[in-house]
Amino acid sequence: MGESLRYHHTLQISKEDKVKVPINALPPNGGNGTYSYSKNSYFQRISSNVVKSNIEEEIYKKLDVKKLASTSNIIRVVDLGCATGPNTFMTIQNLLESMKHKYQIQCPNTPTKIPEFHVFFNDQLSNDFNTLFTTLPKDIQYFAAGVPGSFHGRLFPESSLHFAYTSYAIHFLSKSPQELQQKNSPTWNKGRVHYTSACKEVVDAYAAQFGKDVRDFLDARAIELVPGGMLVMVMQGIPNGMHHSDTVNGMMYDYMGSILMEIAKEGMFDESKVDSFNLPYYGPNPEEMTKLVETNGRFSIERMELTNPAPWLKSIRQIIPEWTVHVRASMEGTFNRQFGNEVTHEMFQRLIKQLTQNIEILETKLWDMTQLFVVLKRKE
Image (cartoon, rainbow, N blue to C red; front, top):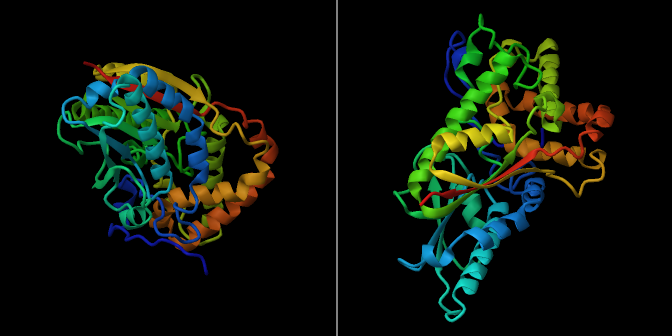
C-alpha cells in the first residue's frame, strides 16, 4: 500500500478458542514512519500542556524537594507509559525545572547544590525503546534509564521513587474484560468494539477491569514512592453522569465498530472478528477515581479536576485527518493483530470520511471537559 506500517506477530490461536481471548493493548507505533507515534503525538503533548501550570503549582506548593533530597541529594523520577518520544522528554524537562526552582526557593543559601536527577522511562516490553533513546536530547541534565514492564505491577524497589508521572497511558486497560467473551451473557458485546453505546452490563465490565488495573497500579506506586512523594496522572476522563457515547472519543469508537461491520459485510473478513474484539480502553469519571484512591488508602488527593483537552481548538473540522492519524499511531498495532493491515488501513481511511460527515455533532462536543487531571501524594 506504500504506507509505512508497523507489523506485529499474531497469536497462534485456534478458531474455536479465538473468541475467548481478551485483547490487550500494544504500544504505539515505533520508528519514524508515516504513522509512527514519534511523528504523530503532538495532540497528546498539547493536551498534556493544558495542565502544565497546574503541575508546576502543585510542585511549588506541596512537594518538599529539600526533604526528598536530604538523604542522598538524588531525586528519582519516572514517566510511566513514556512511548517513543518526544513528548516524554519535554515533560521531564518541565518537571525537573519546577523541582529545581522549588529547591532553590527552599535552599536560597546553597543555590549551587542542586540535587542530581535520575529519570526512568517506562513502557511495555514491546515498546520501541530504540527510537526513544536514539532521540534522547544531547544536552540533558539528568541520568536516564529505560525500565520495560507493565506499570500495573511493581517496577522499582520499595521507597525508591520521589516523583511518578503518567500521561495518556493509564486509561489503557491491561486487557479487555474477560466477561465480554461469553456469547450467552448480557456482557456479549456483539457488533461493537467498545463499551460506548453498549448495555449497562458491558459498561460495568469495563469499569470493573479499570478498577482492578488502577488498584494494582496504586498498590505498586504506594510501595515504590517514598512518603511525601508525588504521583501525577493525566488521562482521558468523563464528567460524572455523562454518557460515554456523548464524548468525541466515544463517538469515534462507535464509528470504528460500524465501519468494521460494514467491511465484514463486504466479505473482507468474518463478523465474528468484530464480536470478539473489544478495545482495552476506559475513561473514568472523578467519582470513580476518588473511590479507587480512597480504597487504596495510602495517598492523599491533592488535586482532581476535569479540563478541556483542547481549549485552543476552534473547530474539529480542521484537524480530522491529523487526529485520525494520531489515533492510528496509538492504536494501529492492536487493530492489526485482530484484523490485519489491509482491513485496519481501510478502517482508518473510512473513519476520516465518517468523522467529516458527522462534523456538526462533533462540534457540539468541542468544549467538553474530558481530560482528568489527578495529583496524589504518598502519605507519611
